[in-house]
Length: 606
Image (cartoon, rainbow, N blue to C red; front, side):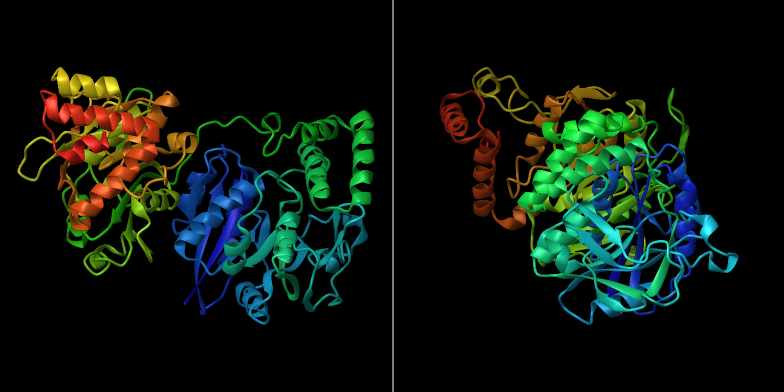
């Protein structure tokens, strides 16, 4: 069964978004599997909590900031691609479903011609939102056209909606090619996204749809309009007609788009108009012209509300990547769901009261990714599949590639990376959450790792340096270069932690970004911890959160020789060729003449 992702964007539009989601219940289809995704652009009106409560089946992505139309929808598109969507319906949150067969009709149309890459329906003014209400009789309300296809005016750089303000009498009820689509509601097929990519985020708001269509046409696809299916649109609910936001982004982005795609004569006319606006236009228009020439793209901070308390639909996302360890992945899931029963209460000063001691399906999620076809876990973990989000890669994308995919597909305020060879001990999840809340999400955490026999396991490290290697090898100062276990019973600040158990708040992920995919495996923990240090983000070892670690289960199955080659490549990628060569020389001397003797695999990693 083909998959359809319905994606909408919310920014302080709780009422509109809830009304859209309620109207989506009208959709009828037995042909397709549907997933509704709401991307929240850091709203402060209680949207996330309300949506999660009233529509728990909807996946809510918290962007963490106002990413605009293009950036917000791109978050949703990326999430839907990982889910495996075949079609993507982008719909504004101020739209309402009118036709129950919207999905089927649009997809049936797009399947008529393999060149059709995207298609929009007829869009009517939602009753009461017409531009000129006094023109229409009561029987015409709800039938006034806002979009019925159209063309792009390349002389003046702007879209022209056909049928605008006309009463719908069936005059535009055809399926036909259209030079423009409407970003308010458009269906896109995956082949187009795979070829040209997502929306261009430099626009932020306005002209991103025109740019997308232009790139689609240049790639050999066609854009279509289907006048046989309709939706309603509460026009200009987000920005308002004639607002500063509209003035700024329309002015700046029209210049960006026109100077990129327009003919020479048009570009010259745009420059003259820009000069006129700069001298005599409204304040926001003058700023838009200035920022174009300054090369400023994306969102304009002064035009956006300050981000207040960010809401997340879930407290914790747990990401697990399996490669050739299906049996251990099953044990890990057993430990998450069975070894963390009950509810404990605790409170942290200045932090909202929380109740949890282990896995709570109302506030947590588990994502399992099978990283390739070698020993997939799906059969072994089938009893958990209704409770977890399951993903599968056709081929092994490496440690960072696999975990990055689970991060992108996660929804929680906190993300916990667990190796598939981990077992979670009782109350360890709540200890990490409690500690993270205490730090207000401003620190990365890791738990205490122990071997299956109960022996302690080194999991902390200092970032590798020549000085540290000298201290470890020649002065015998343990922990200067190799991994060590911090002492004490309370959280202690460290320079680095192994990623077998790595707890990252979402706000830190938004700032520091994903794992480095420059290596297939190894050194991703060291590289990320170095990046955290550069951003001034602390890392804490939390001994009260305990995890059994079957150390090296995946790499043992790769084979020692292959693992060693990957280790060398990763070390050279991290250190650079010159420093790698110098460090390798010092470590070899340490192996031969130093006071500490270690396996060769350890000194190569640093």
